[in-house]
Length: 222
Image (cartoon, rainbow, N blue to C red; front, side):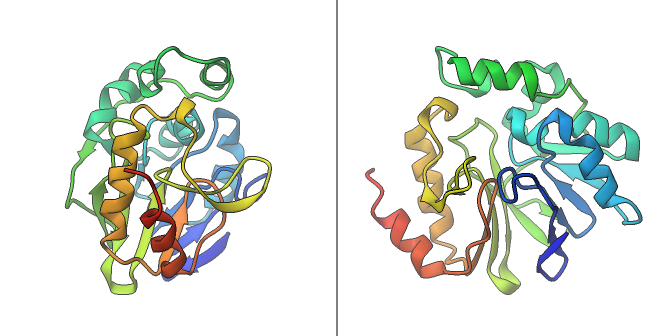
């Protein structure tokens, strides 16, 4: 694991920074694809994990959630508006219609099965040392995590800092995977008001340049 900050670790991935999974205190945040189960559990071996939270119910973030929660006997938490998708296992409503080929392939090969949600998360809830920020748009119940003490933002997929080919750089998530792009931009402007200094993404390396983050969001078209 890579230590990002005190009590925050980024699990090793393949490719590195392609699909990010974090250990936030004793809470696992996101769970990659269904095939990532062994990689996740291997890295968590010997560590205390009390719960699993997902930033949103997309196939590359909840794929191994059911397997990890069952194996470790820990509860699953997610944003309230993603609870139905996670508990039913039907993630099709997490994407804009009509469902494209790439989204269908992800749902078929990456998505994990349904799993009960023990705790719906809302704005202001505390998870480990972090505060939940509701950031809908990319998915209906997308959430991010904020720690005021060191101005650290675990952003999920509100923005990417790279793509699946390993190219680094700030970008909006593709519209084909984003249920409401305009609302997602509103969420990006919301978190920019926090003035984060360290930003962790669902895709791409950690950004330790709050000014660059602010500049990118400022130029987004409303």
